[in-house]
Image (cartoon, rainbow, N blue to C red; front, side, top):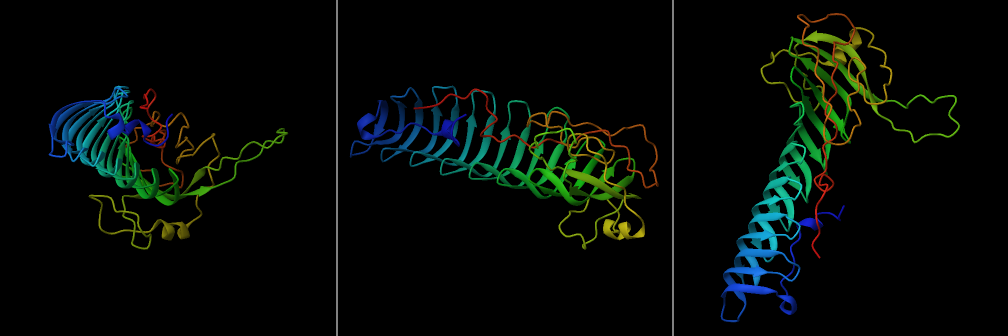
Length: 320
């Protein structure tokens, strides 16, 4: 794979190596107004020029099959534009200084999509990542391309609300089920158990494990749990899961199954790549909330970390 964003940088039209040009010029002989150019590296551009540089609306076609249609400022993508990649992925939105910056929508080769804020080519700010295979969504905060701070994983008939760190849930949170109940608890980082027969220490991968506190009917998080957003349409009266935990003993940590565990011990992150290909679903034949201390049935896996646009393309050519 190329360096960051190198597949998106156009060839330079310097005086010593202009290539072919047909179009308008200013009094100084510079390209100015509408024109059509073929660069020495095989790329082509048709659109507006100003004082010898691409400025205004234009279409740039890369020899590798990529294509950019949008605004330029002094030879750089600036403003609104759409970039189509050879593998079928596409970004449409704001650009600043040749980078995805502002609000934009990215469609990935596997059908996943991201709609939200960008900063210097990375998902950054509020955004929604949708996994095409299952329809599951992550709705929340991104920092430097990763799920961070407070967010929500939404599945077909249940969802998880809580804080995320480095693409994983961590700290207080709750599972909300459409059958009308919730499970409150928290994700804790726990060192994996070591096998006695292991002669060499394997690379330790510390993943959060879910510790359940209590099953309740639908509630809201109180302001005492800072930052976790309320759920639309839920009753106004609320009780903190931390208060609930004081009323009785919480569940023991669930055993590891090789990955991040959900309320019933099922893996929350499958580890099978980075395209969210294994979100499962909650059992749908439950018809009432369980008021015991056992975790509610949740046989599904949550979304895997979203693929980075800079590593998601499998066959992008390069310009000189």
